[in-house]
Image 1 (cartoon, rainbow, N blue to C red):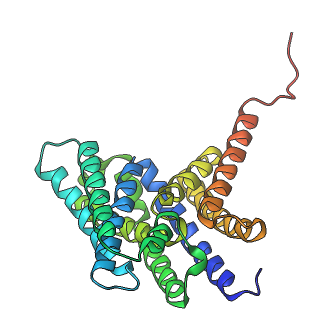
Image 2: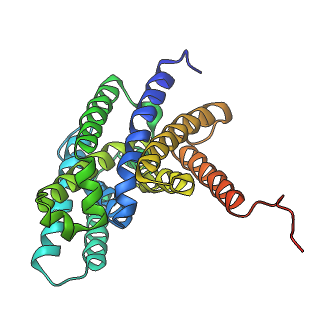
Image 3: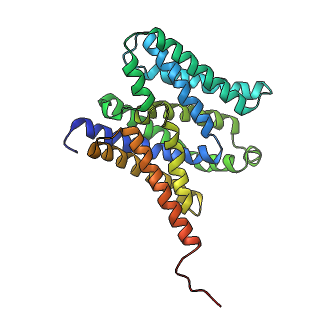
Length: 274
């Protein structure tokens, strides 16, 4: 398995983006932004369609730009209108998906490419994708760790963070932008349909055993790494789709930590006192 070049690239990308999604996912789940990331990932379908329409052989750039545009539009509508956040996200999600499907239906010969981005195809990543994943992991991971205290305070109590002098609005916009970039790049890992699971399941698994934020961050990074590596290995050994394999490994890890949490809370071997 480790002698094949495509498997080496797939494992490296999984070990880069899996932990990064786990790290970002701690704040995504704490701030209840799972539906937000789901909207961004589905908006990427419109970017993929626009990229193929404009003649891009690799639509990563237009996909990322369109996702960023949808994220900024989402924040703008939230600030400037009285629409509920769920309404805005549902509107942009359904509109971008419908636009992408209409454009893809007008193009010929891209059905296979559409399936790749819908369901993920990490085994086809090239050296450029590996380098890009490394740069994004280093930059985004460094930014999160550098602003860890501010992000934690904003997540826990935004008004208190504002009073403390933290640039809340700027950090919120920056977090949304890096979340959008991470989601857009992770689509090659899991596909549009499943990418949100890598932001949600590893932090949920870590939260089952963590007693504080530091433990949850470390656990989420470890769970993302285990899910990415285990899913790629399982797909190779058992000839399974790679994206769903990664998700199933993460789900198995979550169920294991949940069982360990319940065992720790209610030990079955404790003697009964009459």
